[in-house]
Image 1: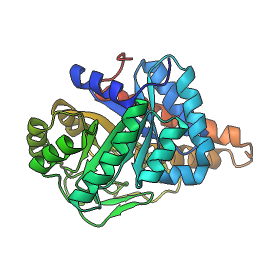
Image 2: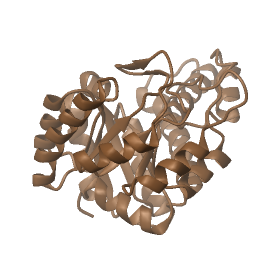
Image 3: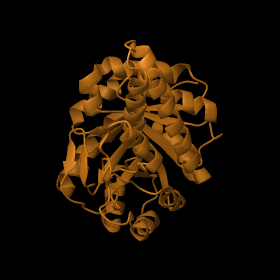
Length: 304
């Protein structure tokens, strides 16, 4: 299967009323886990790299993602997550990414529109999809940080999409980046999402949507982690969001927790181990299981 445009995946998801999982990768093991899960479930996926991932692994890491995407039998879009500048988005487009996010959510409305239009202008010439964001999620993801929620205004979202011709829009409806998304009962603003969906005709994207599965947290804590108050977005709420027009759901935190828990467990049980391949193989399998579960929650299994 050739590398595909992110827009192709999202338009098919929109018609089919399911969502495509978007999984952040920072190394070989995460990339292998995501691709293996997609192949086993016959599902499309976004394999995405943030600016932090590119700083950590360089464009060599992106090249690895592209190499995997081009050889597997399921459709894969390689995506820039939270691109904070026109220059980075352009660099990723030129490198071969099939989808990019330009995140101008921290900018004034007019400046967000202006930078998004610039990226759309160069991306569409190369059949590269563009995701933008309106509103801000509380929490930190790599270089993206906000101390508070700024919810997406439905009418502003409609105006933004019309003026930018963007392919998809990430919306802020109460989710957060990181492992500590809620202090009280987990809840996202599904009514706001419904109102946005009535006014916006492009696929919607949900960031900060890791479920922070209790079994993953418990496994990590059992072997020395300290994640006792971590909680994420319940899977039933994610399913409801998909029914209301969300076509792409991002996943990062659960992969990190699964990775950490599996490495801690292996080293505790195998204190004489020193081969990185032995240490990291269980972590790869743990992350693969996370991806497969998310694919099934989103309804993208057998949609390749």
